[in-house]
Amino acid sequence: MTQDVVIIGGGLAGLVSALGMARAGLQVTLIEKKSYPFHRVCGEYVSNEVLPYLRALGVELHTLGPARITRFQLSSPTGKTLDARLDLGGFGLSRFTLDHYLYQLAEKQGVCFMLQQTAQQVSFHDDAFTVRLSGGDSLQAPVVLGAYGKRTTLDRQLNRSFFKARSPYIGVKYHIAHDFPRDLIALHNFRDGYAGISAIEKDRYCFCYLTTRQNLKQHGGIGEMEREVLYQNPHLRRIFEQATFLYEQPEVINEISFATKTCIENHMLMCGDAAGMITPLCGNGMAMAIHSGKIATEQVLHYFRNGHNRKALEEGYSSSWNKRFSQRLRVGRGVQHLFGSTLLSEVAVGALRHLPPVTQRIMRLTHGQPF
Image 1 (cartoon, rainbow, N blue to C red):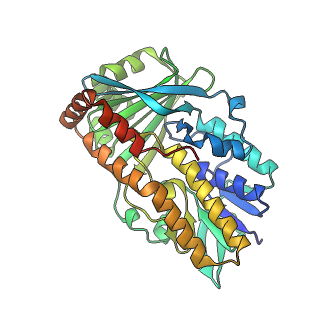
Image 2: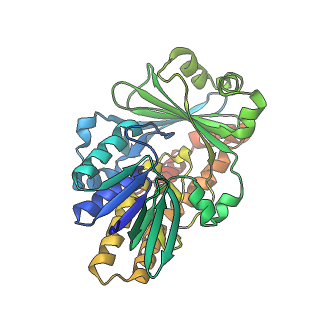
Image 3: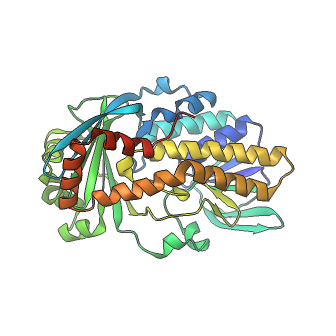
């Protein structure tokens, strides 16, 4: 089957790209290993910088009941806090709801979805791609987008450098019911990790944390680790003791890597976390994924409308991607190092409490402007 564009991965970057390209008249096929709707390990907070573009795509966000978030709080492992206003603000919405909505919108726009399948191999020959699927089919297209998230076997096939080294990080997510301000996103530090809580739709909250495999291994299980480590922060202890947890088991993801990646691999355009993941502490991953989908759409449309110049496509995408995101990723990695140990976290929060302009500066450097 021949298409204009094949997109591998149906997260935010893939869905937004598919929707934008289909609205412009391209034939798009999207491959996703699961069936919608489903949960993802994600902080589920989105900066308001994405709102103009979502409206341009026909997204009626208000129908999904997002929480409006305007305030930020950061705590040290012992519970000291700093509070700040969010310049742009943001909204909270579960990936279960948002991804499913975008999937339905894209399907109505004519995107062909191949669900419960994976891309087993991607080859490039004679200026075109062949994508071989787990179900046995093959797709041909002049353009392929890699929007498959943080880490897959395709990264091994592409011999990507970050895939060669194991990452120490794991992510854990719950949805909870809790008595907590719905306009606040809070990040609470603990030994070798940090947790975030913010409101989503239907009076629920996303509660998600990042820690290390070693932390988990040392305590033998998630529940034991939470009681022995996360409970040491009084804000987190309060959540665990007072909230109603709405999953029987948490969503868990392993091998989260913040290593430098490239946004072009074997002529594929890499989008979202496949191109580079900002640390969750910065709270801007969902907005960056949506923005990368916009950039990919613009560059691919230019490719089809202006002579199928692959060199111009790759140079244009790489230049635009790096201009928008490379500094944010560098700052995010730097901020991550401030919260890697109990002592350093205490010092960082203590210092930032007395330096509000520095806190605001960090948030501006890890977020963009409305697009």
